[in-house]
Amino acid sequence: ELGQYRHYMQKEIFEQPQALANTLEIIAGGGSVNPQLFGADASGVLNGVRQVLIIACGTSYHAGLVARYWLEAVARIPCTVEIASEYRYRDSVPDPDTLVVVISQSGETADTLAALKHAKAQGMGRTLAICNVPESAIVRESRLRFITRAGPEIGVASTKAFTTQLAALALLTLALAKIAGRLDADAESRALNGLRHLPVAVQKVLELEPEIEQWAQRFAAKHHALFLGRGRHWPIAMEGALKLKEISYIHAEAYAAGELKHGPLALVDKDMPVIAIAPADELLEKLKSNLQEVRARGGELYVFADAGSEIVESEGVHILHMPEHYGMLSPVLHVIPLQLLSYHAALVKGTDVDKPRNLAKSVTVE
Ligand code: M6R
Image (spheres, rainbow, N blue to C red):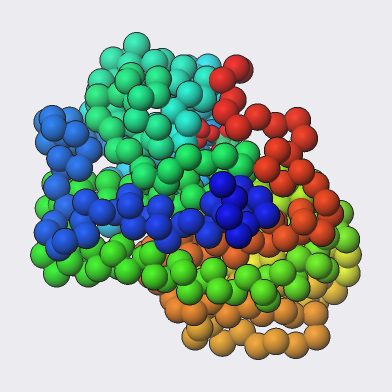
């Protein structure tokens, strides 16, 4: 079953181009985004939505955090993202015009399911599940659904489920933008082309594996790591830190780079590697000054930069060049090297990659 791969996690990382192509098959032949992608009665549910509430756990929560940037910037719909175990016990204010989006690979995560039921019990009937398992409890409980077609994910660390969730959330963003009259035909066709080209773009990033493997050799000896990102790549920094903790047992934390001065900079010294997500976007200059602050304290930098980022390699500054800047969908590409980094760090450390200690693939108890 594993074929040329050593672990399911590695196999699943490399299956991402295919998983994305399958998930996006519905838009493959041209055409346009329409609400029916989310279910037959989607128009009725999506029309009149005033805000979006995304609920999930772990990696699926990080996908939701990325989507918040998209939904607000492209569809201009206010969005909040909540950890399921917090939402379900919080005395929140229900709003029937809110679209509740639950994201789950398994569709069986106890807290996410309970949070969905909680929202419904409070009168929030506009519900959508983004899920990888069609017959799951979460899908059955939701009015609308989008089934990602990642295929079975066996490794405990979620990889291809995450990138296909992002693809689904990008489609949702476009559908809501269209309903709100904020997506003209040109913008729609550009966005759809970006999505259609994603599998190829991901494939190119996967080719960086040998370089990342070398970085991982150095990483494996570390006890701590700090991940920095800004904007829609901040959740990608969070996802990178989660992956590193989960399978290589290296303590990692993620920060919005602008928060560095408000505390974590005190931790930076020569033993604290700092991983930075540095896409060539509108926040790059801000990020660069954060990186200078790290260097000034002797912190070693590992930077994932896009072509065009103009960050130069120097002592203590290691750069890995991503093939291209990918605009709104850039988080889908930037998570790939972080998955590979944690995978290879785990290999060097000899941990049980597919079944990390203390964790279950599907968390069906509280
Ligand atoms: O099946 P779900 O997407 O609901 O699972 C949520 C989390 O348990 C899951 O993403 C977890 O964080 C992963 N092991 C992270 O790699």
